[in-house]
Amino acid sequence: MSATMLKGDSVAPALERALDAGEGLLRLTPTWVPRSFLHPGRRIKLHPDDLYAYGADRGGIDERWFGSTTEAANEGRVWHEGLSFVLFENQTFTLRDAVEEAGARLIGESIFGKYNRWPVYSKFFDNMGPIPHHMHQRFEDAKLVGQEGKPESYYFPPQYNNVDNNFAYTFMGLEPGTTKQQVRKCLEDWNKGDNGILDLSRAYRLKRGTGWLIPPGVLHAPGSLCTYEPQWGSDVFGMFQSLVEGRAVPWSLLVKDVPAEHHQDIDFIIEQLDWEKNVDTHFMEHNYLEPIVDESRSGAGYTDKWIVYGTIDSAQLFSAKELTIEPGAKCTLQDPGSSGWITVQGKGRMGKLNLQTPAMIRFGATTEDEVFITHEAATRGVEIENTGSEPLVGLRYFGPNTHASLPAVGDYRG
Image (cartoon, rainbow, N blue to C red; front, side, top):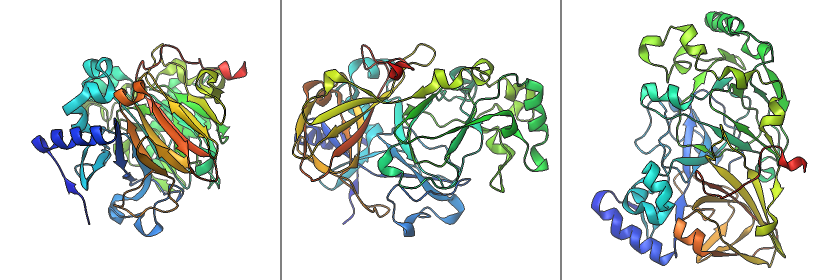
């Protein structure tokens, strides 16, 4: 039986009942996103028969978005593409509508008052091979086309990386000493096949259980490990690589978020890069992350780790943690702000909601692995219990300025 979708005035009373019944916890349904220019990696539990559920012309589904009020910027998209839905009593409504109805209750007065929305989201992206070398515009550049910039971060959960797939390395930035003229030549050579942009970059081997912080304006060509990716609530990008694994990348994906009058202005396009960060001689030192145990939030039978931390241009825009609870153990999770939770291993319960890591998901089916922990639930505290025979592991990401303090990039070195 399919759920009834609610909109408009019918959302508020349903949301109120859901919040009261779940004591501030909201069950979210899987949000699948296809990408026409990529090849699905087949590790995010979607049934193989459903990889092209949107149609082969739309491309394979290689992403699942979590706690999202951000629309996916895909051509030919369905109206709700990228948006998360709340499920309660066989009725659904978007998390975006829920935040509009009760923003302070869901995400806290400070975030809702400043942004009037949940300004971040996270996703799994899962590809068979590498993504084209690309960047996400800085806030000032994205504003030119009515969008927001997109800083992001990576974490490679071991539970979703049983295989490496084809290229478990990520090119990041540009080799120190690279000139803008060299990059210009690559863009001039767009239609000659491989434009050679990777010759100007450096690849880093990806390691399970670690991550990276990627500022906007920085080129990167994500490799083939399945990636958990907390990020700002935007889907702007510009592809700088013309050919990937024999597949041509259209010029339109380079200039998707460039003002129309500059679509052929190579110098303007290059100026959207944060040059200093791209040619950083200590790129890994300034961007690489390893988990750090939060001793203040860990105890007997459970461990809470920082997996995404640090700031971007001195701003705390998002962060993420990984909670592991041993079989038979339980803990009270208390955070200073709301978060989007995804269960990646085991089973248990969070408050009154079941937690179960699925083995296989049909397109359109509901699951018990995703929860939005509202501000009121997070600050009050939520009991989580492992009722299974293996560790219960969940990843959760937070919005801007949630924590009074968090580790700095490099603190994992002690």
